[in-house]
Structure formats: structure tokens, C-alpha cells
Image 1 (cartoon, rainbow, N blue to C red):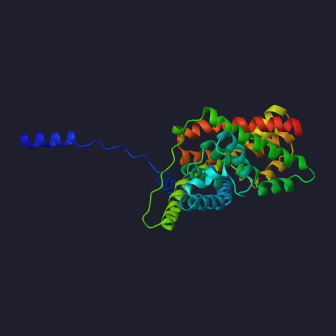
Image 2 (tube, rainbow, N blue to C red):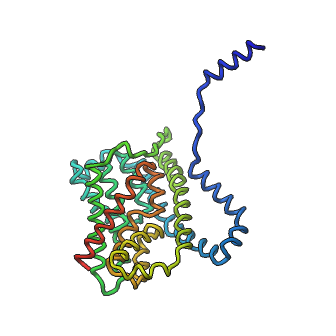
Image 3 (cartoon, helix red, strand yellow):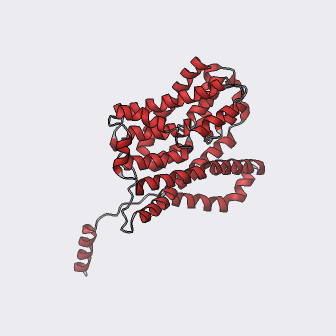
Length: 334
């Protein structure tokens, strides 16, 4: 018997230690759904029926705005990964990254999608060999300066075309600045892109597999980000904003922080900014420039697509660049 125990001990020592696997975004989503279904009566009683309904309305609003564009981005990124030759982007963009960054920023005006669409597209571009600086510039510029966003801004601010030009100038300038900053300070090892599997079934099999993978991978984080945004919107009273609006600097900082918290779609944020009549035009511009660059929903999607290490470094830099560009442009044009 002692021999059996010894052999079992030797086998246990030789067996490789199993690494504990963390929860995936789908498992987190499933746990949240189970918790929401089981704890709903208690949550309604705790926060009040009106608060619960307000939370659900805001959560659904973010999801309804984001999911169509997330789907568009996933389909486009999967098509890029499956059908577009790797050398195509090298022929379109200049070889020097410093020149490729402004070209990629200008190309962001072509794709009429919001920030939820641009994140998976940027991930696909990096996987296809595009310089990370150019891909990140495109990711920031696309939801901020595309024609739909500029038209919605023009409609939201009738008789104020300077708001459209200010948004275009500040957003494009901040996106290009981040691209150039990545060239100087960025590290490739900060990016942790999920690898796509190669399929023997051909490009169409790879296309559909990439759609399933990217949608569920990014969709789980989108749900988490939307839940955080809805919670923050429900808990922060609107009356807290009134004293801040009277201070020119604090007003800009308050609306920039609000843009991060509320996670509005870039096609709709101009109407929200226009409704904040107590704030200055520069503060409204900061709300519209910062929101498409970074918010709680986007931070979760950046972590899902590029890794948590990237998101921790990227979010503060993008916030500072967008806020600085909005303040400078507002002082000059508004």
C-alpha cells in the first residue's frame, strides 16, 4: 500500500499544475442575467420602482444605439480579416507611419459608424498588418468626423455652423495627435489581439467564424459597459450640474467627465449637448469630442479587443488629448 501511495505521490508531482481560467465575457454576462432575474424583486424594492424603470430605460437606450453599429463593425472587421489581402492596406496608406496617421484620420470620415463599430475594425486592421498608430487614429476619427455625425451636429445646433467646424477640427486634431503619440511612446507588446483561427473550409468559413467570435467577445463587454453607464446615469442627479455650469473651467471638465459616464452614441450626443443650455459652447464641444473617444462602454470594449494593459494606458491619454483639443478649439472658434 505504501508503494501505491508513493506512486500516486510521484504521479501528482509529475502532473502539470492546472492554470485557473478566468471568467469570459459571456460567462460574466450569464451571471449578470441570472443575478438580474433572481434579484429583480429585491432590487425594485431597494431602489424604488421608478429608479428601476429609469435604469432599464437607460440601459436599453445605450444597447439599442450601440448594437447595430457594433454589428456593422463586426461584419466589416470579419470581412477585412477573411477577404482583404494583407498587402492592400500597405498600398493604400503611406509607408511612413508619421504620414499614414493623418491619412488614416481623413479616411475615418468615410465610414458612417459610431465608436462601437470602429473598435473591432481597428483590431482587424492591426491583425492585417496596418501600423497600430494608423489603426488607432482611424478608430478615433471614424465615429467623430463621419458625415452622419457632422450632419446631426448641424441639425442639433441650428444657426451655429461654427459648432460643426469646431467638432471636426478638434476631433481630427486629437485623433492625429494620439496616432503620433503612439509612434513615439507606444509599444506593440501592449496590444493583446485575440487571434483568429484558420479554417480549411475557405474564406467564408473564416468570415462566419470571425463574426461569431468577435460579436460575442465584444458584445459581453458592451453589456457590462452599458450597465455601468445606466447605473451612473441613474445615481447622479441632474441638479448637481447646475453649480458647475457657472464656472467656465469646471463646466468644461464636468461635461467631459459626463461624456465618459453617459456613453452616448456619437450620432446622438450632439442633441444631448444642445439641450445642456446652462453650459458654455466650449463645454458642449468638450462633451461631443470626448464622448466618441473614451467612455465606460468604450473602455470595456478596448480591454476586450486590445487587452486590459492597453486600455489602462490608452484611456487617460485619449481623454487628455480630446479635452485639450476641445478647449483649444473652443477658445479659438467659439
